[in-house]
Length: 219
Length: 219
DNA sequence: TTAATTATTTAGATTTGTCTAAATAATATT
DNA sequence: AATATTATTTAGACAAATCTAAATAATTAA
Ligand SMILES: [Mn+2]
Ligand SMILES: [Mn+2]
Ligand SMILES: [Mn+2]
Ligand SMILES: [Mn+2]
Image (tube, protein in one colour):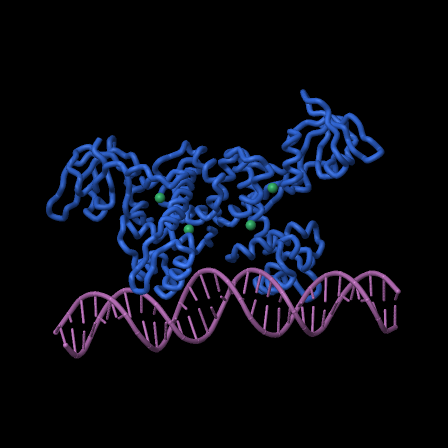
C-alpha cells in the first residue's frame, strides 16, 4: 500500500483524533488538518476505497486494522525524528514537531530502524509520547495524572498534552521539560493556580490552564 | 521563493547537467528526471516565470543566478544527508542517494546548519562530491584524474563519477571506497585493464570501464 | 538545397488535492 | 412537531504535474 503525503497526513490525524474507538467527524478532521470539510469528504472516499478507513455517509470515520497499522508507522517515524532533532541536533522540544511533520514522510524501513537503533531505541519522544516499535506496538503509557489533579508532593514531568508552540515556549522559559522534578508547594483554591518549585530555583506560580496540560508521575 | 518538490528536482537536475555554461536540452533533462520531454517544456515555462532559468523556445535552459543559488542549497542538503546516513547510520555509499533524494526537500536553514555542524561541517560527501557551504560556496575540487589516466603508482580514491548502484556495489565488493589507497601494479595495453593492489589484499584486475569512473589523487 | 530525421513544443486529457457555493441530512430549539 | 441551526455532502471549478499524440522547428544527410 503506497500512500501519498496527503493521505499519510489524513491517516495520522484520524489516528490522533480517534482515541480509543470514538468516531472521527468531518469537521474535526478538517480543523485538525487546517483544511475544509469538503476536502475531507473527498479524501474520505479515497481512503475508504483503499480500505484504510471505515466510512459511511454522515457517519464519520474510523481506521481499519490496515489503516491503524499505517498510522502507527507514520507516528513511529515522526517521534523518532523528534528524538533525533532534540537528542542529536539540540533542538528544543517546541521546535521539532513541524520538522518531524515533513521527515515522517520519508518511507524506508531500513532508515527507520537504523535511526531508532542509533537513538538507542527510545520508548518515548521528547513530548513524552510513546514510540511504536517496528511492529506498531506501543509501550503502555506510564501511570500519570495532570499536574492539577496530582496529589503527590514531589512529581516528575512525563508528558505535555497540549503541544502548541505557545505552551512549550512557556515551559521552556520556566525551565520545565520532560524529566524535570517539581515540588508542589500550594494549590490556591481561588483560581486553581499552583505554586511549584524546581530544585535550586525560586518557587513559581502557574495557572490552572498550564497545570492541566502538564502530565506528571509521583516520584 | 518557495519551490515545490518537483520544481526543486528540476532545478537540481539542470544544475547537474549544466557543468560550466553548457545549455541544457529538453531531452537530456527529460532523460535525467525520467520524465517526458513535454513535461519538461511545461515546467520550463513555470521556472522561467519564476526567474529561476533563462529559457527561449527551442534554445534550451540555463540557471539564472537565483536558480543556481537554489540549486546549491538543495545540493547542500542532499550531500549532508548522505554524510549523515553513511557516517552516523552506517549505510553504505551506494544506498544513500535515493534516501537523500527525499530528505533534501525538507527546507529548514536551521536543520541544515545544525546537521552540518553535527557532522563536523564536512567538505565532501561519501561520493567525493563537494558540499556547498551555507552561502552556496563550493570547496574547489581536489586535483584528481581518473584511474585509467593516472600515472602515479600510489593513489587515493577521491570520487566516483558514475554513481550507479551497480558500480558502487562492485566497488563495495572489492573494498574500494573514498580514501582507499591503491597501488597501481600494471596497465595492460590489450584491453586497458589495470591491475591494482589494496594493502594487505591480493592484487585485483579491473576493467577500463571501471577505472574510468574512479577518480584518484597521487599520494 | 531539398528531404529525412530528430528535437521540441502544443493541444488536449488525466490524476491528485484542493476550494467555494449550494444542496441535503442530522440535530437542537421552540 | 415544526423550525432553526449545524454538519456533511455534492456539484463544479481550479492549479500542479504529468501524459499521449500531433504539429512544428531545427538539424543532418543525400
Ligand atoms: Mn506530515
Ligand atoms: Mn511528539
Ligand atoms: Mn529529490
Ligand atoms: Mn552524493
